[in-house]
Length: 275
Image 1 (cartoon, helix red, strand yellow):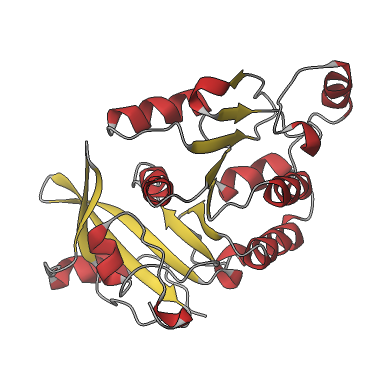
Image 2 (cartoon, rainbow, N blue to C red):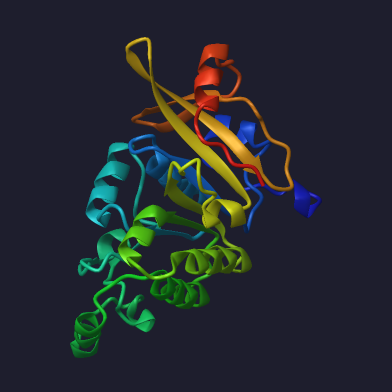
């Protein structure tokens, strides 16, 4: 590829790459939004797995699901979890398993211990002193981890749970700082969030460089799935909804099949944000 504008980071989903006119612009943070069970985590893992195939380093920050569940889901899809580093920042995360390259630590553990993930007196003392996860503590941990390892891809699953666990702290400023940090870190990131409330433009959507939205609708007595590209800054993209499915091979997007006008009208009834 001759120019920087021609370089794209494949999502690992051919049809989605076609919708994105080649893939994501590298080094930028993107939002993946949708309702529960819409396939957000599957897309995130597929994106990381594509990076592994290409010899890149990939990091998943697991908040919603324990790494053990993520490993089982990935194995069901027939993928190799071994080279995806999974950082469990949930305060209950304690175990470490070198065989599958998974790091599970409490969010309050010192960032310097992430690589070794050893349980010792100092880390146990910190766990007692600071039992909660916060946006700020996560950003500090990521800063240290990204300084130690040059990752190309990162998935945060999910920012919705992170904000919920942060409690009453002023999360908007923290989230804006986190998204800005991911952008400056020059790592291609997928930040997973629940489908946003139409009455509020969430800071992660406002600051991200684009949003991929997954929809799950009941149509003709069966569940149908659609993907829309809400916005990708600095890049042309498909503006039409497209069908996708989830099966044992992961996410597959039919980027050529048109969605009916009735479905488009249904999808337009969902909240959509512009920048």
